[in-house]
Amino acid sequence: MITLSKRWKDLFWGCTAACAVLIILSLLTRLILLFALGLLAGIVVCVMATAKLRCPECGKVLIQEALKARLEGEITCPKCDQTYTLK
Ligand SMILES: [Zn+2]
Image (cartoon, rainbow, N blue to C red):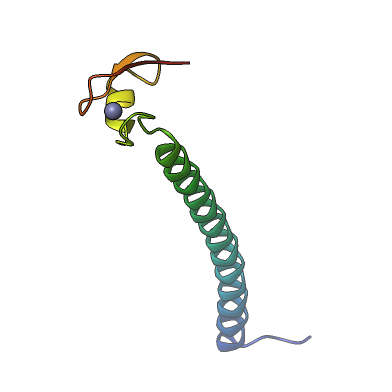
């Protein structure tokens, strides 16, 4: 009968645990990467939408007014007092 020394067992379980930790870490980093990419895409879309939401009369960015009106309803340009309806 072959008996395994305790040290061998410790090494074996240590390696197994390290492998498991590595796999979990790689999964987590992948998730974090995906999350970061999603966040980045969201920011880019927001910035593009913000750049588009300008007063046609004076060119002032109206995102603050739009957010105050919860992105729908009427907003007034603070620079030239022109009123717009958001859809
Ligand atoms: Zn304006």
